[in-house]
Length: 414
Image (cartoon, rainbow, N blue to C red):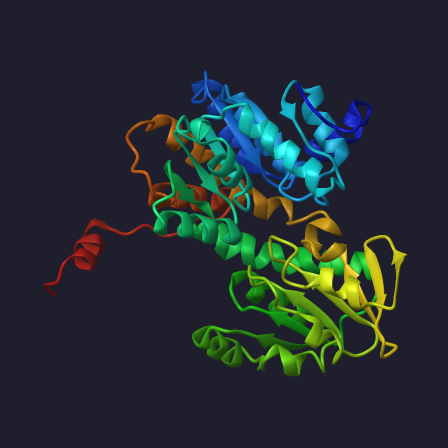
């Protein structure tokens, strides 16, 4: 059973999925192994990740391992209706609509939860949150899962701290082969794919303000600099602020950056990063965008309230005129600009992240009933396996420690 916009869109979605499949060699190899071993036979997997082609191929890989898939998107604007149709046409259970309002979005999450999944693969914690708050009896049946993004990990850490986490979860976001590449190189490139493709404006010579200097912020700042921007970083973490300074960027509070910036990209995972006070000090024509998971970093709701005029300038650009006469332009409704206004991370990058998700799901299945109820790091052997697979796919080989070197590195005696 599926709940989607239009099954006739499936051919277009299949073309997209086939294109990314050709460019995701790690998942292709994992799929072959899953088809042989059937690690998920008899299990249901509930998945909520941005529902575009790369995610769709992950779903097919998991299904090839015997899983009964129940799928929704983790952001209304990143869902692609043709991709959802392709999965549904292939027999998977999909509940997702591009542009869904809050009620419909929650309804789709709820359909995944009501399917009673054994394994949860989440991006932002929406499945787990609804399950915990509304369906605790279903929550008890889950054997484990993995969380894809920083915001979801923040939620999970809070749940664990409060004694509310009820099943094992792997911190996929903080695996080396995820955050070092996905968050940095994936976000860095795809943010400007989204901004540039939507606005058709130049980056070079502009002041680009990046809020937050975590891995997503580092990647965004790096790409902005590469495009010729003058980059300003805002931070609350003193260590990350020092790092940004030593990486060659200006660092200042948002109240000061708001007066200078031409393009703003929030990457913090927090709320109220750009607020009413900042709006009134901004220059006419600034671009406001977000690369954090939820649309709470730029206070778009308040901007709508204080605007004396608003109108859509072109697809994915909403203009708001303030009482001082300045126009501020919000991209992708303040949702993830790289997905709401673009196609997300490059396929080769998501190949690594989704390889970790797939292998962690298998680890959960293989160790059901044996894992502690806590937020756990991805096993080192999975991280290293993905790294070796990636190098092999690139035709790159590396050195191997000799027994003498291993002994030297493991001994305190020299």
